[in-house]
Length: 340
Image (tube, rainbow, N blue to C red; front, side, top):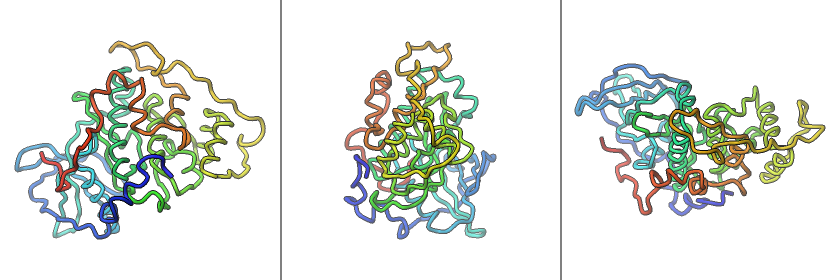
């Protein structure tokens, strides 16, 4: 059970988190024109577009044919998060009456490709963007929602405007934490150990593990070839003692396996010079490399690891804390849509 925001959904009631009865008011796609393809995946194709009414650039996410409840889930979560800091803003939902294609229209982010961006980030840049990501997570967690697939591909950064947006809420889950049993199908390199062994009663801390992995030099840190190898790489960084404590926190018994899980215990990798302890860098200096234990500080056991809000309050973010964070009393949009 999460030690924060554990009863948010129970207090708000089923109308807050259930999506099967959520009613969608579809718009006509005639208002929007496609400019170019941005990318796509298993469940959608994504295009840059233009709103012909106001000439604003937009993003059109065309959903591939899937079960109706999955479409409702994504739209319900996006509408619930209207006004959330650093989360992609949903502007409209449209349906083609002829082909029955369903599309989400969101704000446009002039994203810089992660593979070219992370090597250019300075220490202040890293602090700035990680604070924005934590701000988004604290907000969504406080509203009973987990992302479940935080990774570079789902974090858009407009480096010129210094703005970050979390995207892709399609397979995310908003429900009472006590009833969570849905497996997570996120990316292996950003999965926490309990998910790698099929643990289903997870909580918000899984998003913090993924954030810790992103923090580690803004690239894959644990790069396992499969779930077992992924666990082994995590154990070799945390050390056998901390790894075993993590498993005990979830009452997980790991089967005796080969490839290093038995035999001589692994010591924890000692803390190296990382951004939390390194001198301040100038804009021309290369970004510092977070140490393995810097990652582990975000990717810790659920009882001892920091929440998003606690991580934001740390000394590392002291210079950027005034730039973000959720304002007390901030209200979500009644309509569920952002305005241009």
